[in-house]
Image (tube, rainbow, N blue to C red; front, side):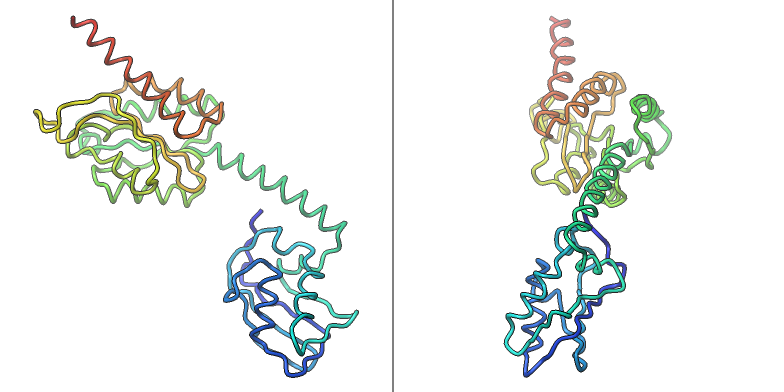
Length: 296
């Protein structure tokens, strides 16, 4: 579990004796004990029998600090000119005080941390953001039927759903919305529209901006440059940004309805992005295969 230090970043080590010790080496020893980079710890003062250090990172993992007193003091004792005694302790006014926990207390805190982490992860997973895209929706020329449908469907599955603003057809704007949603702690982000073969369709390109390994399977292919087709086909997309699963669906409402059961089952089964994208693309391709067969 990750802890925020909340500006309580000072460590006080006392009593100890320093005789010509290299303070830079002291800082490096503490950084090593806490699994930090050497530049992430500095000595801010050495007064009589006190050594005061500052940790220069905003967050640490529980495993980096809990019950690390012995490890830290042993690392310091190995620095030439630093003399640790049986009375030497590590103090902090903040979360770094967990360094001094005994093993029994440390085990209890770690168990609580794991439980909290699991609860937080589940809460994040259940938070969903839904975006519609496209100038025609933004201008009110086309009614957005996808967002109400997805919102109702997701809520019936126990998800907490927020509806985002309609996104204009712009790679930077869409990618920015993806990044902001991930930063705000949503586990799932769904877009509808903007996956077509016209130049104005920018959703899949925006997905590639935030996840260069996103899955982008075709559901329909064209001859590039034929008619209004500036691209060689229609794709859907599935990517991941931090803890956020991003699913980019087509705009036609019947296709969103076709995709929903597959998306629901894929999330339940915890499919990776490759398999989820494959399943979504397959069900959407069948629509066009069936249409083509009906025209023969």
